[in-house]
Length: 283
Image (cartoon, rainbow, N blue to C red; front, side, top):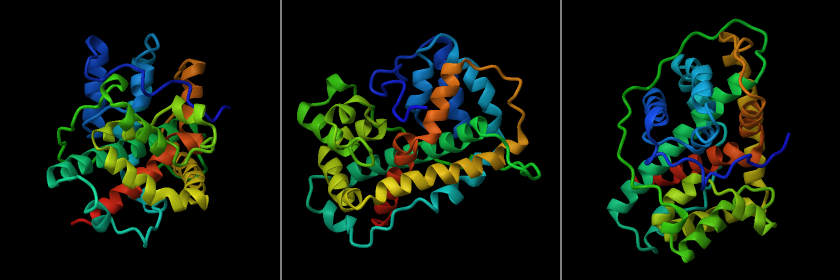
């Protein structure tokens, strides 16, 4: 199993321009997960023949069960990096960010944190053998979420080179290959690209996390999250029989790497949730 992505999140199918059956499935994903965006793993699967439809049909019952939603706070509560010396209010005052910008930023960070964490849990349940024990009682999807319209996700061509440099710098956080510039530039987490509207905020994120990067804390928490989600996924899996679903080997490999690798969705759950908690200090 490789630890790197099998697709490039920057160049996979664009959600906004998707048409036909792909657009219908994207809409269903957003509605089922109660999120305003479709993250890169689904957009990547849309690029491979009928893999999107087959995969979503196979895993949708897990999301619909409400069990990932039920376990969401349990997971996030254990992967929050404590940053007592980081004063977000003081740091925000030093950059050119206004109240409207902060509202937009918070909507984006919260959307990705929820989406990434739900995918992390549900796809772990699909790819992990069930543990011993009784099936979990069905949960409830949070249907009370306000799905705010987000600022558009910019393509690489729409991002100024200086801003892109900051995106890449921020993307190095939590990457075990951060000393290899080619690795850093190859696979950019979509959250950072979505925040490219505000490169000064990305710079703030990088500076805030830098001590935890140097100490290995980000890597440690990312690895911890893969262990946690493996255990949670095995519990959720008790309620489902996926043995009869024949997904292509490359799809299984993508999903398995997605949930097992500390430098894929795991690090973005850790970083996104921690950034969200920083922003909550502004309330």
